[in-house]
Every structure is written in C-alpha cells, then in structure tokens.
Amino acid sequence: QVYLKESGGGSVQAGGSLRVSCAASGINFKIASMAWHRQAPGKQRELVARIDSGGAQIYADSVKGRFTISRDNAWNRVYLQMNSLKPEDTAVYYCNCPNYRGSEWFGPGTQVTVSS
Image (cartoon, rainbow, N blue to C red; front, side):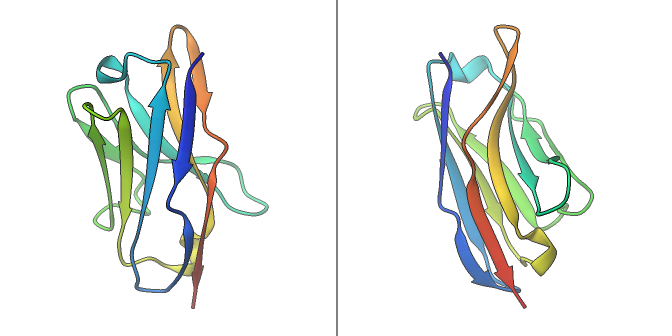
C-alpha cells in the first residue's frame, strides 16, 4: 500500500513563500515519478509540478519561475518550494505518485491560503 502524507501548508500574504513536503511510504521511491497537484474551490484539480526518477521537472505555466519541485530519495520525500505566492495559488495541494504498480496515488492534501 502506497501512503503519501503532506505537511507544511498554511497561510501567507501575497509575495510570501511556503514549502510543502510529502513523505512517501510503501513505495520504491527512487524509481517513482512524483508530482504535486492542487485544487482551488470550484475548480478542477490541476497538475502543478512533476519530477521523474532522474530529476527532470515539468511545471504548469502558471507557476513557472516561482515554484520548484525537488526530491530527497534518502528520505522518501518530495518538496514544493513556492515563492512569490499569489492569491490565485490558494488551494488544497496534493502529493501525487502518477503511476506505481499500475495505479495512481494521492495524499489527503494540505491547505495553502494566500491573502492579498
């Protein structure tokens, strides 16, 4: 059973920074691609950033240059550093393993609120 648990969400003013973390268990972490998604109220869940096992990254256009995804294979963790936050970044942020043993996995999510 893959288990993903986010931490580090919270409230911040516009222009501020936050880092969210995800601890993964039940997984051969170093071979797995990992990602962050988010869902704002009334909107569909969207991909924010993804990092593959080799460290290659992709980002949504809306966060390019502001967010950085990284991973620590020694600790089975993936991070999302969020800088220059905007009110439109307010959402629940979900850790995601897109494909492991034929299934997709999500954590329970952590709330990020950016006030203007």
